[in-house]
Image 1: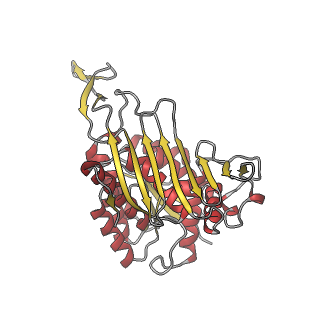
Image 2: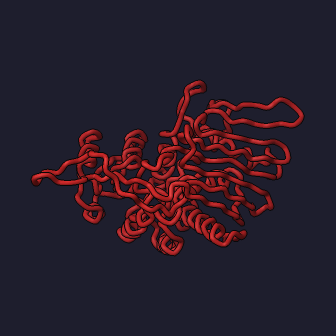
Length: 386
């Protein structure tokens, strides 16, 4: 069986994470990379022995040897690159958000329904072994009727007003930040486990640091030479949210609420949810991903540990090591990529056969959810998702 040749566009945290995961799954070669940061791209080329580096993503798409594209660029580039990849007939796996608005994502969705390229979006949290197990529990009715879904996703990487990143800039990141960046993961995961779509939202968003200090990359010149790192910074107005709380209604009538924050001191990536059903409750924390909590009324609560021998048979494929051997964040993208490339090798038509991994349809739905949250915050009313 010939290896599939892949290319990665983008050299930041997610670009390098994609390359590392691709190197671990077998039967895939990382053939090329490109990035706006060519110095970093060349570092990755040397470190991972990648044969080709292109100066632009457009040049990369012209390479006939490349069969799949991993789009790991900033948000404002997702639509253009994803559209170009579809037009070129290359399979495409995009970072989220799929685009920065639902008009663009709807256009991509129409294109994928006409052109049979395999498409996926990196909702990687679905692919923890215990998340797959929880989904099968819910599908078998073990939780009973779902009453309530609640939780949070908390980080602190933008805690200070001196913390700065491109995600703070609306023209690059889009009109939502905390909800679109991490709230989208939370919403996708609880919908994936329960099989229930969010039908209505009522949102309250807040920006605590309305002015942030953006460090100058090059602050001044002296006798024709650039001087860096003098501590000067520009004051930048911020229009995207630092935190949000969102009330939810699900299609079966279940209620929910979640809070997201990027200014919660000490919380690095605290992604937690609880699903309360008429028979049992279920909870999971991403920072302790090898345990799944089950709540009972009539007996002691339980902890299910990640052990292939104890998991649902459909979830076992996502656990690569025996019980007692923890698996964590890098396994999520890896498991998604395995499913993505196995689907490509199967030769199935993605227009006719629905993949088991998240596709551009899921990405489009999450953008509609984010837009509903923004509309609800502006109007201070419940907003329906359609």
